[in-house]
Image 1 (cartoon, rainbow, N blue to C red):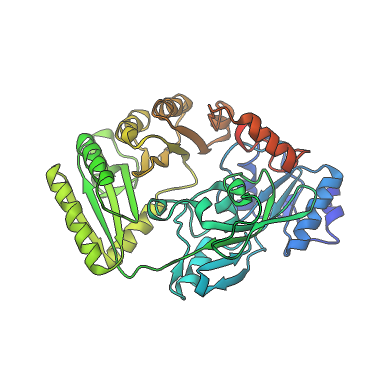
Image 2: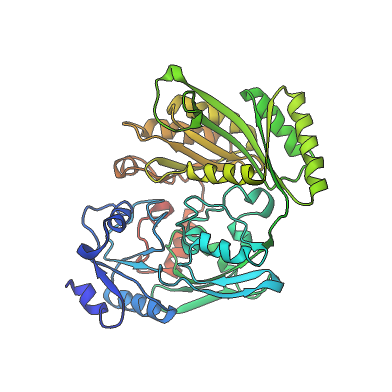
Length: 441
């Protein structure tokens, strides 16, 4: 037994590296820079046990990689010198669902899909639609700030998270916010922890605001050329339409199979599909009125139009989520909405099998590329376009060789000094996810 496992085994559930399942080993190794694996994985079942393992780590100077279900563990920078992985997968309880207040308090290891099923039984839901939604944990969701297309209507995770508890580098437990929506006590640690990639503390409890499940949902897909997409998007943004989701999507269409990204075909048998995907929700009359308005915009710009309701609507969004895969190069991007059509064209030049989904209201979204040799130059071209349009590109997942050949985050702002100061206060010994966050923090 390793020295770390031996020290922890009396008080905690510890699995040595050689005893881990192969898929967990692969997820962890994809997240760290070295070829040497960590000593073991500790899996606390209570907040007190989580506090204890961090206190041990502080006393011994062990560098820790926090992990939930592992679906997004490889996102961001490669962690350095990891001694111990701390998994919150067994911290997976629904602590309290205040149905009347539209809030829910959960532990971080609870899967998003499992929570949504429990909430929908009460006619409520958490307004997120993240990548790998069936596997993703709520702690990982917050750590990576992965909201999805629903941010068009409901805002991002920073708007949904209203209370948080976390364990500090030294084992102390901190908390902020509360279990009611209107809570103004203390510092806004919820926003600070969201998107911090486990670099400031390990989440132990989360409280979210909820929304009622819509009775009527409809998706309308507009298709056309780049110019039509640009003009129609501008008109939709300036209109009084209030969609739940508003995305611009570009993907390779497989002519023989009639599906997206089904398999690699010769270039002559493939073409690009540019679409605007709009989803409405609400009372039936309002959905009908907004649909008619959108179809009028489509007609004005000579665009094709497809409407999906009921099961077809649900199936479409399930398939859209499934397109994001763990064996690809995945980038998170942001830019001015006016620059979206040109980014989609550039994705074609960089990678014929690319897939891009941008949220039309704010210019945030995904670019997914098939793994190819010498892809770093293409990613840098996409990043340059985003930066010229007031945005960014972060390389979330990809081969280690690609991450080691370029700056994963590509941060060009002037806040690194502030970030370092915050890191020094929250993790002065650099024990938490070292190297994973912006600037190697």
